Length: 147
Image (tube, rainbow, N blue to C red; front, top):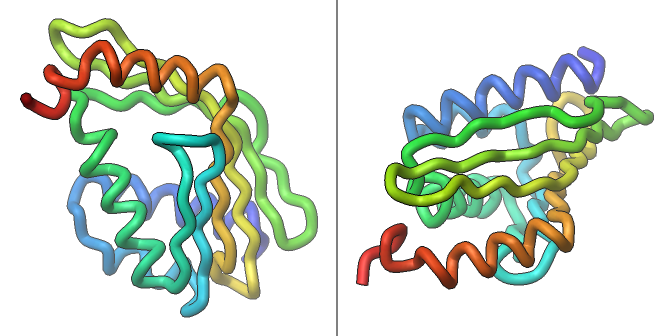
C-alpha cells in the first residue's frame, strides 16, 4: 500500500483510538521499535521509543491535553504529501471548552514508514503555537486541570 494510503488508514485508526481509548487499534500501524517525538518546547516535547511507549505517549497526550477540552477540531493546512517513505502534512487543531476562549495550535507531522508500518512519527509545533499554548495554560489551568 502506498505511504499516503497507509497514512490515511493510520489517521482513521487514530480517530477511533481517540473515541475508544483502545490502543490495540494503533498497534498494526507502528513497528516494534517505533519512535514518536514531539518538538516545540514545553508543554510539547518528548520522545517515546518502542511501539507500546509510542501508543502510551499518544494516550497520555490525549488524556493530559486534548480531553481537557469539550471539542477538538482538526484542519489540514497543507498536504499530505509523500516523499519516498515519508508522509508530511501541516495542521491546525482548535480546542474548545465552555466558558473559555478557543485555543488554536499549529504544527507539522511527519511519518516515516518501514514497509507498511510507521517507524518514526514526529510532531513539530510552531513557536507561535507553543507561546500561545503556554500563555493559555497559564491563564486557564484551573478550569482545565482543577485546583
